[in-house]
Length: 222
Image (cartoon, rainbow, N blue to C red):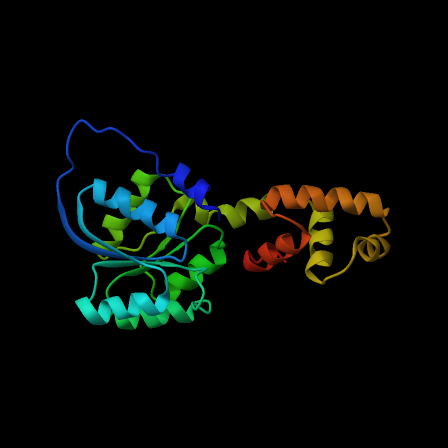
């Protein structure tokens, strides 16, 4: 996710009252400088006393070794060195099994569910509004599990919006077939398949056919 998109989710605001200080220690691990600093700035502006930022998983583990466990660790799922959910497991152990949550700009509902099953305190999309993120941080630091309802419903919505023909074409994409091969299998014109691929990309919010196939697998659509 581009830093400027995230920054738009954290607008500068003028408040009439100074937020009450919250005795909470939060660690943010993200390899994008602007992203982690934007999140940290807003958490601090909302009264969270101590927010530490680091660029790597190793640095996050080192921070807990040096200063003790945090009330909450926000861990970027796509950060180099994470190796999927292996990094989550490592961070939970390093943080003395206190709350560790994933943050991401493009992880799927399936990844979020797997993370929670693996012990994550929740999943926070980077595209959330800043105030919603602060609420989520406080909620998870209190020991609760957080996942935004609308996000967790996305796979069901996507599946419900696909026609049978679109599902057939999506299956072909997942099998790595070309438009010509899919057209032959379904006895359709290649131009028709191209139109279906374009529609599928829009419905799944995919960047291209490869991304659509990846999302379909992660959302268990095929």
